[in-house]
Length: 168
Image (cartoon, rainbow, N blue to C red; front, side, top):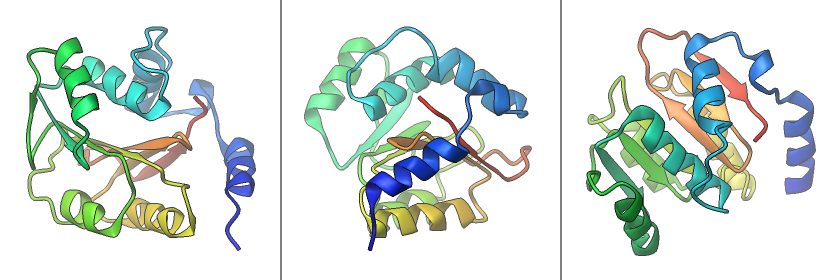
């Protein structure tokens, strides 16, 4: 039986803050982006998306499934950012489903070295937790940052494969 509370306890036990990270890229991402004081939203996953848009100076975003309210908020805060349907600098997947992962993680030829994917609900249920393990194991994915409520996925070719668990 899957128990989200036990997953959370396991996450707390193995997670770190910025002091346990030895990758300069991830250390800067954590300290200058994730832990930045400025908050755009009370929703943790969406706040990470908005902070990441600022940090990476993204010009395009893909939001799936389509969330017109959140898309409107992004346009209000970042008027120069354009929503894209497939290939974008930041891809926000608000649900961990096989179809979305197949299209935007494993099969997307549009993801590149500078693409970041923010994936929410990675521990929503047993199926999403299993899918999250599959994402981490993917050869295309080089770096993952598990924040329990959401995760950041990177495809950086110059980086060795690493998985981080970071408390937010």
